[in-house]
Image (cartoon, rainbow, N blue to C red):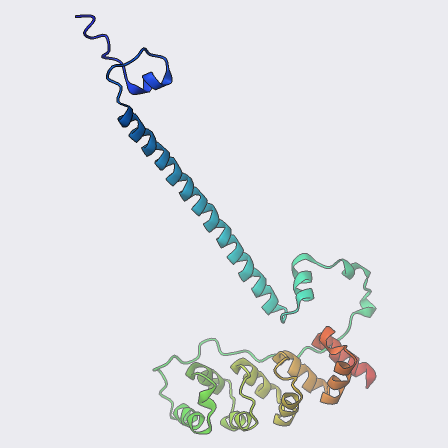
Length: 244
């Protein structure tokens, strides 16, 4: 009876591990299937961990890109200003207060926070404004929300009409509002457009040049001497004031 129950406690694990005598009931096929299943589970777990690591890395890259783009936008897409605003500048310690340029930065008019939503326009005057924008072509370049915001900001249809007639249709609606509020003349905008500067300048720069009297001829002079590309608009204004 004792001989008959001799192999009751055997298993294929103990057989392979080598700490038990030969088990007549050892099933090699079953053992291989079991080991393959465990290996597959480990491989699947490692793959999921690697996917999590890659997802975290991608999220970190995305956050950095958004952060960098925000700082570039705030600093008028000026790389040096962005770097200094984030990390500071070692050069600041060596600049005396008398050397800091004094520039009158133009005041940009605020954009209405809550323009009228589509479907809520009941004003007869605004309806006429939209109809005029359709007839003179302005509606081709600006959405209804943009037109509503410009209307609420006091931009006249005559001003929009002149912009379209002059071919100045690539300016954003905040730029149009700022030009109108600051009194930038259509003649000045047209000169900048014809010289190719309007598409490369931010609207605060355009307003600063207009208010400071910077001429297109002066911009040409700087450009011909390879100076314009390396100067921001406050530096251009200061240079113009120094030369005039």
